Length: 226
Image (cartoon, rainbow, N blue to C red; front, side, top):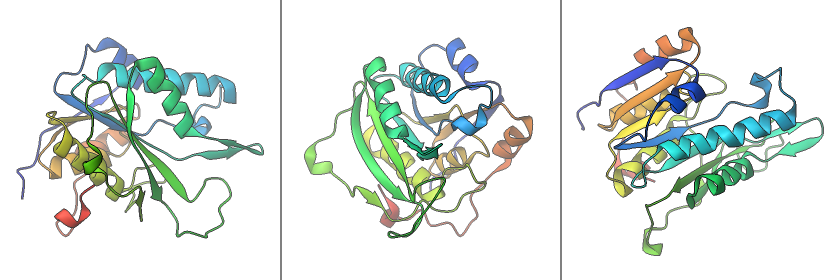
């Protein structure tokens, strides 16, 4: 069992916090950007522009030896499909990053009919400097996202996959989540021995993110490696 890592949670607006930072030396990022439903003052087009700029900012702050991992679930909006994987890829082009992997994470069993959100999420990893050998290929579909602490949270198994990837393929040992919510990414990173930094606008959620820990029975065995 790894020694638990250290954790810091800032109560701040993520874009302003990131803008004020230099390059986050020794860090990789794992995050999930907020949905259009959380920006009632923006049109869909305005939110898309914000999303691309925010994702590009995250990638710009990660050093070349780190990776930026995004967990995003598409939405169905007024009869159209909003592809967040495409939006993150647009951001990566602006940031000069290359796609290392694009995984599908099942949120519901295959064959399930859904309405507001699809039955899967995207898990995408980008980097300016990290490259993978084809012999290191892994499964393209994760059978489950894992337990979530709130409806907009990232599943524990998806967090574990992302943090394991950082451990195995980068020299970075701090995970930054600029939109950390209840702190699932931070708790998983700490459980693996990685340090973690979270940013959360809501004081209530930031408090939960500081306190969240995995239950002792959670399985961190190699069978769950990414």
